[in-house]
Amino acid sequence: MFDRVEIIVKAGNGGGGVISFRREKFVPFGGPDGGDGGGGGDVVIMADSGVTDLRAFKHKRFYRAGDGGDGKGKKKHGRKGENLILTIPVGTVVSYKTQIGGHALIADLEQPGQQVVMAKGGKGGLGNTHFTSSTNQAPQIAQVGEVGEENSIILEMRLIADVGIIGYPNVGKSTLLATVSAAKPKIASYPFTTREPIFGVAEVGQRSFVLAEIPGLIDGAHLGRGLGHDFLRHIIRTKTIIHLIDGSSALPAEDMIRVNSELSLFDSALAKKPQLAVVNKIDLLEVQAQLDEIKEAFSSAGTTALFISAATGEGVPELMAEIMKLLEQVSIEKEDGEIVPRKVFYPQPKRIDVSVHSVHKEGNTFVVVAPGVERIVARTDITSSELQRLLNRHLQRLGVSTALEKAGANAGDRVRCGNFEWEWK
Ligand SMILES: Nc1nc2c(ncn2[C@@H]2O[C@H](COP(=O)(O)OP(=O)(O)OP(=O)(O)O)[C@@H](O)[C@H]2O)c(=O)[nH]1
Ligand SMILES: [Mg+2]
Image (cartoon, rainbow, N blue to C red; front, side, top):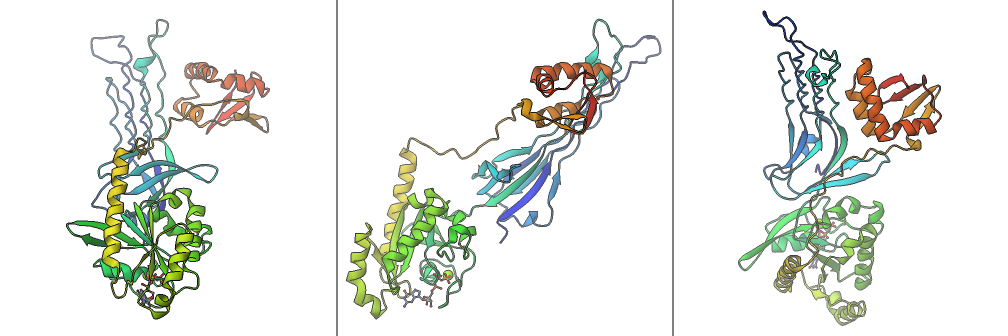
């Protein structure tokens, strides 16, 4: 099952502006007419209900949108680079990989058609028409296009089920799923029979809901033991939980408490999710003999458990009715609730923050590390003295100059930012 992929997305670079002058037969001194470069294409991610998994991303890691075309004479704009639209399943969570190794959530694409820009195309450079001034009627400068953004992103599918069936291995999760739905999971008397979440649709009267068996939670699942770690993520999406417990286990109530503590260790939100404690295998004589004690143990743990036999179907209709009620309650609470969870997170615009910490020295060169500034520098053709003057002014505004001075840079020192190196003035 391909439910998590890491890819690199690169937006298109902007096209360059051009230096060009009008040349007409009877106009001896035509003005500048260099057109602007076209913007680079964006990489966009879109949820599509026709896509069911992330398989398409398994064999390709790098995705690139089209570059913008260069501007042309006669004030012609360069063509816009083509956007690249990647379609992903509904219910995919998208996050950026941050430089320190963690990730930052960007969007939770829950609705078909929802989209987010994952890498913004570079702006086209300005042609020389933009650089005329009272003192310079024939500017020999034009901007190069801005470099398109590049990001490492993580796509993670969170399967959506209304009800997650959880519990220790071998407690009868698959058996229950097979009893209430048309799903045909493998059932066997050993643990870890089920190795990936399995879905089924249950019908109660006129209504139906989706159930998922979440495989093998064990102690330490929150640390990645067993199969649990991967699949704990899937439970986050479910509205309710059926917590299945093997009635023939030595201490059933204890089992429930341990599994619940795994949930809360993984994510405290999981522990708060409504759940029904359900003791299974009551058809077994040994369980029947213990029934009162088991009930007792659950009520001292603060829960009223339901009792079923997934194998014979005893108590299962009552369980389904109970779950239906719980689901209705959850959706009403959601509508009434004041706090509606925000589903889509957009990345904050990158602030350009330059401080003395952004400057360090490599040999005799002062290096400015600030992605926002790097983008600006990348847009400027450093060889043109006119542009360099503009750039210097810009850097002054951003606080780069102050940071460099504080770091001890003097006129004439070499300064580098991104791929560019120039002489500080
Ligand atoms: N007597 C009895 N046995 C049951 C009942 N439910 C499940 N079993 C048995 O318990 C064993 C495990 O059942 P599964 O449904 O595979 O359990 P599971 O929780 O899905 O197990 P894993 O997927 O391996 O974690 C099988 O041998 C089932 O036949 C029940 O209600 N009564
Ligand atoms: Mg199973």
